[in-house]
Image 1 (cartoon, rainbow, N blue to C red):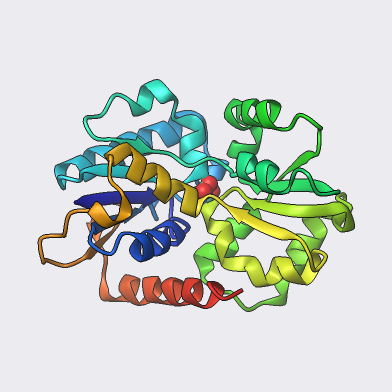
Image 2 (cartoon, protein in one colour):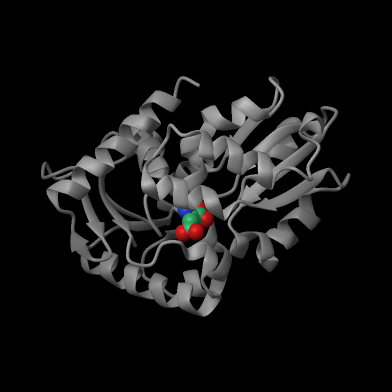
Length: 263
Ligand code: DGL
């Protein structure tokens, strides 16, 4: 079983990190569109063009399924678009439904953060209309976090300052859950903890996406066929195999994700 995972950049590595834990037998191709990141500040037409190229590339690599590890790309790719291709395409949307199901009964509000494209998109608005029956969900765009993530600087006060500034208008003490609606936001859990009250729950869509991948492929976790014995993960940056420098950069992100597992 070979699974293609792509994102505008390094955010989707958080989905790969989850997939590596849950699908120990699968092979992966990870594609980061580093030439075009950030998608969250592009037009829908531009993003669709990038997605087309990436899917064609991954199909040539004979993947059995493709995970769009990017909420922004999923938000512009319609269902019809996804059904155009010969392998299952699994998208990602901010885990609002999950947050409402898990924490909706508790007092307090739910804050959903994503990129400007996702926040402005019809898809998210429809989702919120469907699940937020008690009007408890607020939305915020945090594009700066994508830039911090791409720089790979996980230890700077600038991030705290940025969050404080962008969330100034939101009464943080009233929130019980924070939804990470962009895969790039997964690197900053320690920062959210500094500014939100202690008991806030953090919700991301990674585990749900892997469950959906298994469902689409019709496998239980333990039934996943064994990989062919070659390299388990191949990385590409905008269609080019990664350099040794890129590889070192990827390792830094994977290590950061490993550290965050225990947070
Ligand atoms: N990681 C992407 C997401 O989940 C988007 C980041 C960007 O390129 O703006 O939405």
